[in-house]
Amino acid sequence: MIAEIHAGAHALPTSTGLDHRKMGFWAFLGSECMFFGSLIATYMVYKGKSPSGPQPHEILNIPLTSISTFVLLMSSLLMVLALAAVQRGDRLGAKLWLFGTPFFGSIFLAFQVYEFTTFVHEGLTLQVNLFGGTFFVLTGFHGAHVSVGVVWLLSLWVMALRNRLTPVDATIVEIAGLYWHFVDIVWIVIFTFVYLLQ
Amino acid sequence: MEPTPSHPHPSIRTYLMVGAVLTVITAVEISVFYITALARYLAPMLIVLSAAKFSLVVMFFMHLRFDNRIFRWLFAGPLALTIGVVLALIALFLTGH
Image (cartoon, rainbow over the protein chains, first blue to last red):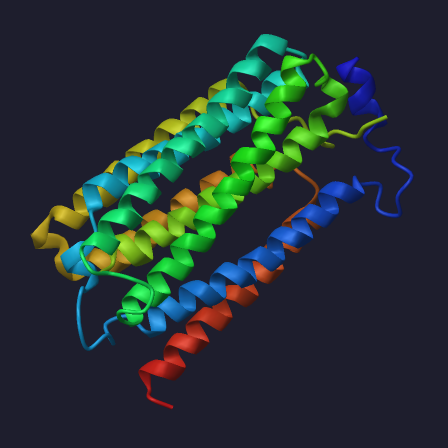
């Protein structure tokens, strides 16, 4: 069956011969690059220009964020394992990894909720200074993207539980995976430029 | 019939190896951050390590290394534009214009 699908990959009735959903999604990810690029540029431009605290070096918790970064990286690994399981028709693997990926994403979100509430208690809010405004907008939008990804992946997990994910459906899992890996690479950049390069 | 990639995706072993390399690079990033002797070289080192992680995820987990080159250009084009815009904005504000 998988061989048949591979054989049919070149016979798509589109002008490029490629899957139009995947093509559209890569274009969407290109636009998302511009979106996050503008938020990162804004953060960088206003970095060190807050006249009053809290300042990044006073408040950012590197050990905690390192753990959440590792969790998000590992969720990306689970995502490719989920895709591989769906492609080879491994139902148990698909169910396991399609649950593990959003579960790890939820752990990342829990870390972020903890971080945000701690910062607010320590006096860093959206309005208090330029650092607070740019930091919360950038990381908040990233967190919102992770939340969308968690819901998306859980819906795929429910499909897997109902045995409605077969190798034929691998493309929809692959597209969800592209989105998930994209939020991961955005975090790779945020972790470096916001947390480590203070 | 649903399409699949025109080239086979990497093996599970490759995925696990990439995951291990990503973990090691993250550990190195955090170590470098705490080593005061490397403070002078912190920015270039972290940028290189971050770019390596970014590339590994895009090439292996997002399969851009194996997929059709149209996908590569669809992503690389806006990414290059983004990097240009970010650098231009930083340069603009650094020079005070």
